[in-house]
Length: 296
Image (cartoon, rainbow, N blue to C red):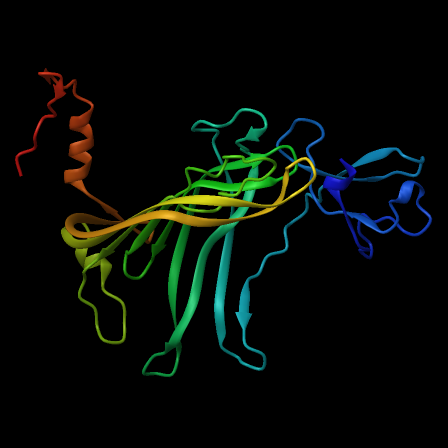
């Protein structure tokens, strides 16, 4: 446990071990959160004052430190702006059994990101504005901590373009590693084709409730991992992850544009109708399933 939790190095004011610590732990620092009491919140551990006793140190529950602005040194123009909000997640979906937890506690997440794209004709800075949504977080209770989300959505607030990423392998463990955490296995991008002025964004309100042409790109990828540096017991100490197989397709479709609370969204009535049809029991003909066909 000591080898897996402590790394050499001194951290001023941190959970470190100074000179003279018994047992050869001098200069070791707690660098990994470790789950000790079965709840979704990890803790850090450090050597207590009574010899070899280890004591639990709760993580700071105060307001998190977050980046709100990024700008070049000496510049008055903000290159990136960030806004945050607190969200509680419902425990939905599979994979919520120990050692994987589906935390429902209040979490601070990125709400919007505005990135600088130049100046307009009046000399004012222009920004692309992105809204983020996160669904179903997953946490490893044995020390890895946060594994990411099952699904994320990013929406361009000015063009209604959206990107939905799915992470089906976040909780797959190989040895002591979670090599696929944060790697999307499916990415769907919908870009509506809308008219816009040369120096501005399209007027989304004029398209609300109407059918718009959308270019959809679907990327599926299967990652793989190579384990490296095995020890004497043939247990790998490191790894690298790569995409083994990937496919991509792009096509056009008609979707409906809606705006709710200044947040645009796209829906596809044909696709929704198709999924509703799939739930209808389908007859078998010579051992082959015949699905109902839609009249287009």
